Length: 409
View 1 (cartoon, rainbow, N blue to C red):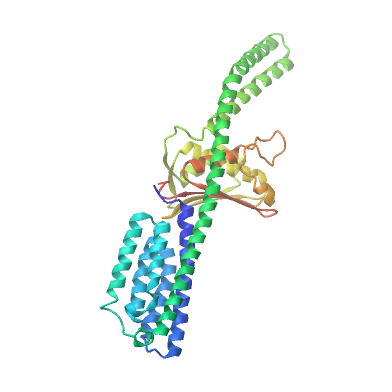
View 2 (cartoon, rainbow, N blue to C red):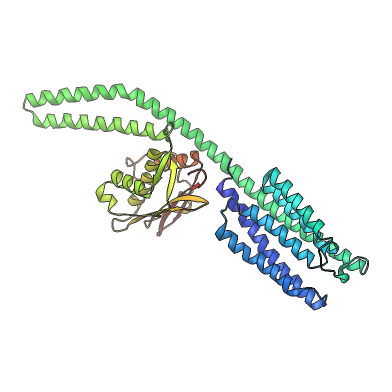
């Protein structure tokens, strides 16, 4: 089972903030130490703070989001060991900070990583006994009161760090529970819609076929009698009947969101060709597709293409005819993204919050059922992804479909 993309991103965001605070705290304490004239290796301690800060930037650029927390925790234990070794070793009261990494691992990384981090912290602490820079002013037998004050400060920092991170994770978990409840409700509505669509297609199939046959006979009879006007009316009835059958079949097929469709490799060229085919040349001329060379995904192709076509068509309808719609395709080690951007009228916050609900539409009556975005969202979530929607009145709308790279490739 892979870690959801939103979980890994939230965890890294919170941890990176703690690491920035840690680097700032190290520099602050170094300043106090210099003022107290404790004669520590100032340059080496300053180097540890610089490495802590710079590694935040390097991890964000060089390590995938799913691995950043693991790498950061291990690196921080090593840096903490070096820092404590430069400032009194086991006599330094801030050895309590080892507990922060074990607590974070227990909250984020699962049992194996937690045990590994606990062992690494234990070995790091043990290494301080033979390998440390002696600082007699920090040792208990030289100044017990100062050492006790240091223990109190270390306890406070450890408690605050653990409380901050655990509280943040609890808020993320609460948001995820609410998202799961909403997803379950959408799944129930999708199941009901699937059943309704299949039943409607079955029940209405026979009468529509009868109407089509009767319309064809009326057309033929009218033509034999020379009543061309009546023949054209009968032909129109037959065409509209066929259109009704196609709509029913389309709803039934879309409600199934790709059930039974095998995932295949799709790339930017394939998606651009699918959009051109589905939209037609007139609408396609208003679409800009920016397929990154690295973009590809393993998804049910027909349903994936239908979801993107729906979003692009909605964007075109929401935009003035002189405005273009952009489709941006991206892939990196963390995620695969399809972004649809229009510069139309946008939506208010109240309307934007309802986008994706079944049978909710901003179109005029008779121009749509309000199922397209709902079905697109259902497909994305059923294939392990996320769909985000941002809209600003007067400035347009941005829709992003996002899948973790490990589940879409």
